[in-house]
Length: 177
Length: 236
Image (cartoon, rainbow over all chains, first blue to last red; front, top):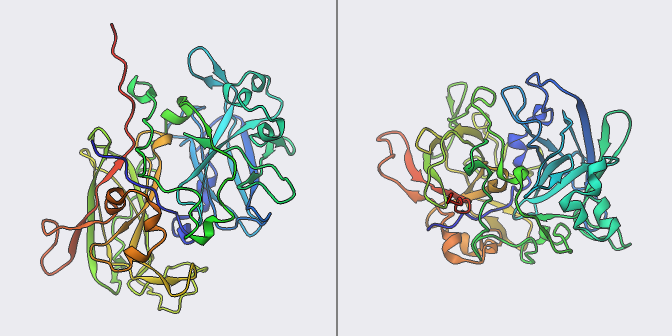
């Protein structure tokens, strides 16, 4: 049985396939509650990661001809990415569990030989209390790295820290999927 | 996809086939690899489902070898291959993205400062979808090697970057295709970051006379395997 092909870094020049409109998942006419999600990507020295491809995927609302469920945003000179998408609802978990609304996020960049996967949940959602993934993280500071905070009406923010900082800054929880 | 198979978790990667996050010989990993352990997440619908990008919304760019009918400089090549999962099932109608340097080893990118000429007839971006049987095909130019600053006298081997989506989010793959006989491979910390030698060597395409076109272009074949799913539980 053949093994899955090995990963290699996206490298610094992936902007050849950077299309700014991909960061707007509503551009094909998707109907529903729009939100914006922004954040910055920060390295172990506290410097912005200015050459990352941030990819967003959500299984809810289900993808269709007007909603791809997938987007890509480059980080800018401040390490900032920004998406426009539809607010996800709860989705089934394993067994009888229900998962709180969330977005899946993958980072690709120079220096990452394979993608780093994380999630963005939304502060204030009652289901966050019982979400299987969030509940499994004991350290509240680490759990908080997966929760986007409101930044105005329908605007959310989540910063992603690749590495624990020298001043004890908390590293984002990354997922082994 | 709401079928039982579309909800089935993906299998773990086989040991040694994937590079680590922390690879000291590749300097850029130093400040970008996590220090904490990754949190293992049993797959849910978020990981088992995935985007289905369509050619109608993401128009194919299958020929990189010319811009507005004007040929790019360099050695014209055809790159084709079969995309399957680990069970050998072809993956039809899935998007394949590529990007690469031109024949001189220079990317059409503002951050690339390598002192090699740009080619106005080469952009370096391609996009295709696999056919009903899982095959993709591009026409391009053989990319040049180029220097980078990882260590003294460091040069990347000739390569084409590839991006695949497959049948679910957890099967997403970004990789690089290399060319046979390249002496830079055994010196390249990106290539060498993959522990398993056989896995590494599967990133090297094969010359393929069957798609080589007389008086036109050399053919290469690069097959790709995306993660397979766990065996579907059978009823009763």
